[in-house]
Image 1 (tube, one colour):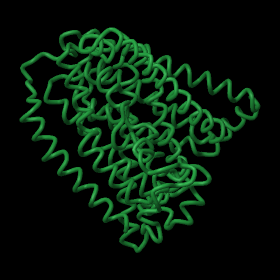
Image 2: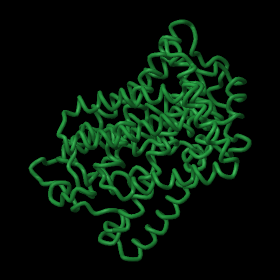
Image 3: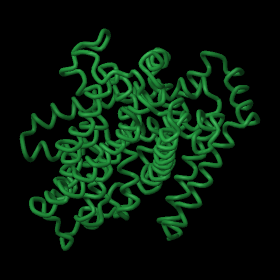
Image 4: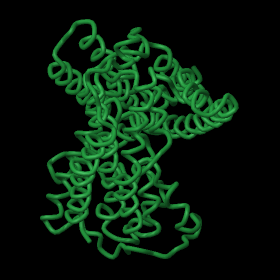
Length: 424
């Protein structure tokens, strides 16, 4: 097995799933009607209900559903071999994932923008609403704890990361102002903000900037670092939760989408170039290692929760119902936004799997890299792919770390926001 064949299989699955299967269901079952007013237009308040272009919403949706799960999950699941992970990523998305994401936009959109809480109250019972919200709060607290730990450790141990993250956030705020206040063209807005954000990521790994953050961390000490970066993380989450969605969450996630998407494109191109040069092969990486893996457990059912985002995840329905459904401009936008973003997340999961299989070059090398941390496998693997299109690893590795941090951070403030919105 090699990288090219894996990409071809995923590409065929995407084409059949989106352009044939999904569009058939969309036209013959859901039947979107653009003559109907959407909640974004009916209740436009400039806070949560805000009509947005489907191009912006696609980026927002993808960056809101794709966290660290579609990266870490496939890398861990490779312990069972590459074949079970690849099958589940493609079939899970094909038959369940995109359907859930799409329906989670359509149902609230046709119910006047109701969230999980209101929908469960109306469709089931008041008790169901209470039980569901208790579960959601506990679930979201677990996400905050997990992502907060990863982001905090990254800020403390990787001084090349914080400045790049700050650049992305500032460009997100600028994108919101340019789009909704200055009424600038979305192409111009995207070009300016994304280019400056990438420049900030590059600047962040220079010795001048890294020395500043190293000095800050050294001055704070081990205990002080934890408090300082925890406060920074909390402030970011607070602002993302309370500010109007057009001012922070939507444009920041949109700019972040381009940081991630361009990395995915570059990674795939580099992977293909490497493969044509005779590399990017799975080597002796086994297709299947057995039904049970020590430390992980049995393939059934553990594989299907190990790879959740990237195949099927309940978090997506929360994003779609509590956020995206209140920003859809017309019903026909729901499929490319909801379904399309899920298919793109499938591609991200396949790329993550390839960083574990093709980038490492074999089973022993994967095990050695995996022992040091699953996210390190991705950062180093992505840098290896990018190096084959002329991007030096001195930039590729810090970029991979910023890539990972963005994946977690853009979800974290939505977690807090949806705690507020979903209970309404």
